[in-house]
Length: 104
Image (cartoon, rainbow, N blue to C red; front, side, top):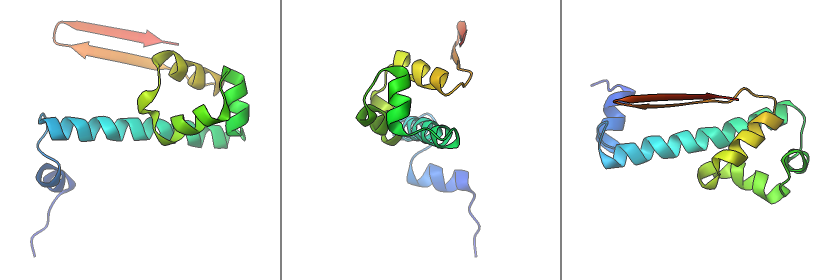
């Protein structure tokens, strides 16, 4: 019986790191994780979607969309959500000749 690592399986099923399919897979995974973190943090703080929405000035439906598909969220809304959840927000962009950090 041959044993396969998770990296091997991912490379075979999705594509090697740096390929367009793998890049999309990694991006989608990160977006899903953001939505899951928002939902879990909200629940841990005993907030309903409606209550979180009121804190940042949006409808309950938008919070639901964020939690289930954070792909269409603006950076401004994301910062508002995490600020309302009392989370420290830190973004970092690294390019070959540039490094930008943002803390909120």
